[in-house]
Length: 401
Image (cartoon, rainbow, N blue to C red; front, top):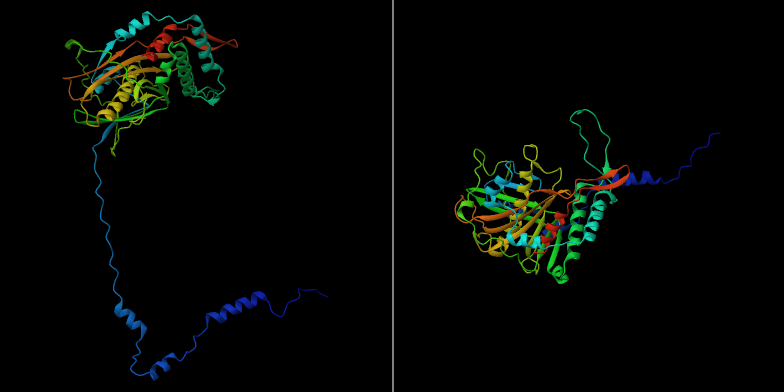
């Protein structure tokens, strides 16, 4: 005997399906309303469809008005990873600055009278080893490339990234300068900004130029730096000749959607004056055409950063349309890749960059010098070779202004 499932008299699924079939064929019953209306006197019966069609009108479509969009001319952009192909000469023409060798006179006098204890130099040497060898960061570094064996696939190296080394060494230098300051109240007159962003728009000889830069540190102060140079003779006011190139060579030309000047501190802040800006150099920095990088291009980058900080503050203080500044603005710049250092001081006198006549900006700079010759492990021992104490002396001189 075969046992099968017992079926109930009322199957739920079948009943639901039958209910839907009946409901779909349901006919509306006559409610006798029409008969009742006919019995009423002086009441006209009108078909509802005819009434609705007579009163209905086509909906008027609203046409959206086109919003006029302001068209800006193209802009030549200088960004964080940009390098000028003609180096310091092109930076001078671009910023209308006269480059003078050496630091200003008051900086030189400060250096002559400065004596840093040997204990401080020993601490700084330990800080260099800590930043370059002892930090715990382990990131995948840039792939090794051997020109003699271009097809060889080198194993990937892990260690401390360039950006991390630069941040650590600059932070340790700033802390050392704070400890060296005799009057500790001077430290309270400064503020340190990390990763500040600057944006400046300029016009020069009919071309729009936009500088959009990000530095590692920016020190601002409650009081501005005093002017570094009062007068300059006419024989030094000659700008370099870039022929056959132009000052916009190696700059990317982008669509201008209305760049706005930006300075990282609001006007009401007490520490609003730019003091020292710290750009850093990594392997990501390159020219537009990826040529080999030389020292002149690195020096130009220091000038551009100092100029951007001073120009952004000038436009915030005196207005976006300012040309000749009522008061000059002095900004210091220290450019480094962790090993080599470049020091410069800019006095911004004018933002009228057209031509080569009239007022010019003044740029004092030093030669690029190394903090050390080598910092690595030798037979498993951390070794720092050829430490240069003059770098710390210049660093403290800049911090003390």
